[in-house]
Length: 228
Image (cartoon, rainbow, N blue to C red; front, side, top):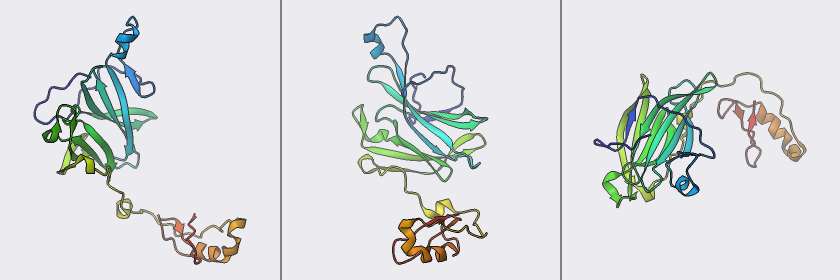
């Protein structure tokens, strides 16, 4: 990982394959030589794994992993990166990687997946406070298309102190594809539910109401969810 040379915005996707590999131990990998003393080792460049989030980005029903990394020179300078991996044949395969900014100048605030979109929040360079921070964020959405991440929709800006994180999931974002129409299994009624066993048995024979395979018996108390 080399320090970025900014042209325009401080983040971009890049396609060259990594020229080296390393293994992070407890989320950190230090770049130092064995002969270095402890003082130099503590101030050596390092990569930290700041977060990993998962979501289906290509629509095949299998979640990809989005790893947020930070590269530090060992001093005050550092830059953020996103690595997107797909599991193929039991092994992680690198789909794409992004080089982001530093501190308050386009650095990563957060990344998450919703509705097959990779949504990334960056520290707003125009609202930078000194060299360390930003008071705002820019939210950018990316769609995986023809082997590349393509920016989609309008960018959003907001106050960083009011940022709520990932948008809350909505029921209609997770529509059921298949609804169970067969005969339900007989419910197993444990002793703590014997006083409402009749309601449970009746409810177990009702139509599926939730997530395509749940019935919800009702008996005047909190509904009991049954799964088939």
